[in-house]
Image (cartoon, rainbow, N blue to C red; front, side, top):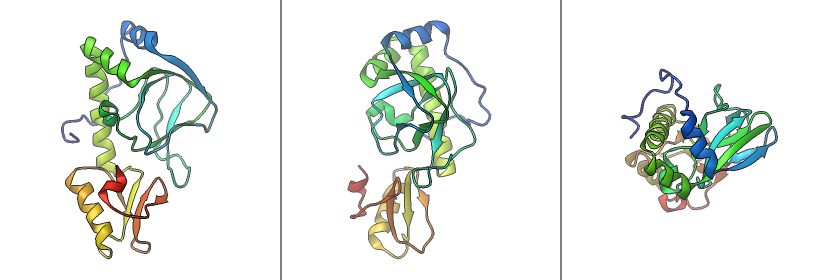
Length: 194
């Protein structure tokens, strides 16, 4: 999938059409977030489609708490990844950079809307595929694998992630283990990542 997604750095921003925004908002609940408040932590399931109405949403490093990327999502943009389609987990931690208001649509209702209005579905899938490519190419993931060459269990996890084209970061060799959002897995197995 990461090879068919567009390159976010060269894609021109394409906002939703006014009637598409109205259709999304008709299904949404409004939420407000204070600066620094998490919208979604890495590893949490993507249960809502999140459209930014006011403010900014940033990617936060789940370990250091620092901003991970220079870009943010602003009004008219939406949060999420391809895992939204199957109710999978978020790869990155998303946080309000400033006071932020969102419109949030439950996943089943948004999937129904995407199937009923193909232009909305196409737009969302295009952006999700491009994000998948960027995440994969940059290795921006809340999964950190360290010491795969020294620990067979960690090596099996790294092999599983690579074989299944799941993004992860490789850590230094000083500390061996598999870490998800800064927490070390007690049993580093592919099943523990599910």
